[in-house]
Amino acid sequence: MAAEADFLDLVYEAAVDPARWFTVLQRYADMMDGHYASLVIQDQVTGDGRSIETPDEPERHVLYFGHFAGCNPLLRIQDHPARPRVMTDEEKLPKSELIRTEFYNEFLRKYDMHSLLIARLTIEGSKTTVMNVIRSPRRETFGACEIETAGKFLPHLARAVRLAERFACVQEESCGTREMIDRSSHAAFLVAGDGRIRYLNRAAENLLAQKRGLALRNAGLSAMTDALSRRLQGLVAAAASRKGERTSGAMAIPRPGGRRPLSIIVSPVPSDPLSVFCTGPLVIVSARDPDLDVSVSEQRIRDVLGLTRAEARIALKLMEGCDSREAAQAIGISYYTVRAHLARIFAKTGTRGQADLIALLTRLVDHFQG
Image 1 (cartoon, helix red, strand yellow):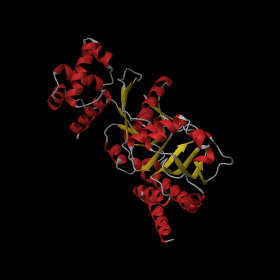
Image 2 (image 1 turned 90 degrees about the horizontal axis):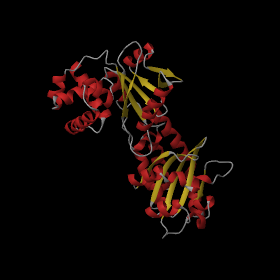
Image 3 (image 1 turned 180 degrees about the vertical axis):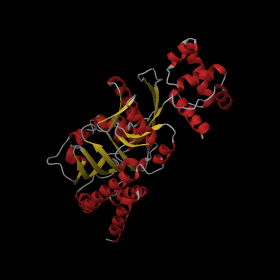
Image 4 (image 1 turned 45 degrees about the horizontal axis):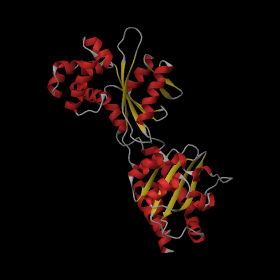
């Protein structure tokens, strides 16, 4: 009884201190005599989701949500009515059928998993939160004793998860991101993966008010045409991806009246494993208006970054919103020469692509303006 009371104290501590969930999972696995435990928030229809687990193996996480969540047969077996409860994998699918699936042979066996104890904690539409404990094939499968024990903890775990989600919604934007956006001299938006704006600075408010380049539609950030909006949304989705690497991106948005295009940089906001309770990865969209910027001289770019004259000219054209072909045309050299120069620019600046390079140049502008 004392051990159970200590565990419940730990569960409610984790509701306000997310780092404690790793200890909760380890303690829960020990009490259920399992070797692995996870807390998973997942869409039962699409398989999309996120998790924290112990022992933590990032490769396993990526492999599951990158492929095997989509072919997990346990997600396809629905019990009606769906409700919070404790069950085993065999209640959803006979073991003889499970072991014939790709999910079992290519994923579960790879990580020495055989028997699952599933505590479904919360249900919100098709999204569920479950706590899993796993045993290896060398152990007995989970039975009535473990189901009864887990059932005692179920309402407490569910309550702690709901509290953790509420705290996460308040805290996910308070890690210095807003302060960084406010300090930026450019228009900057903090957006969710669906494009909805969570925060914006004064320059961004002014840019939206002009209605020349970016607009607010249904609480989301969009461009002035459907084609440009789809491209912008694609960059945001890539930066907010929960599958594989979250990538930065860049694009130019034309504007009427002969004004130079807006230069858009989309970058993921770094997250950690405890973001499992957040509503989704966040992204910063920075919009640079070249007509408002204090120019950075070609010589200054060369001095700071160690670029040649030709390389500096190309870098500045990219910063103005040109792509490689437009930069080649503006400077009067071939597209392939621009590509060769870009390879050397990336090597000299330690950047991995045009988006990283433009972000670096933008930081230089901010530094020189300061």
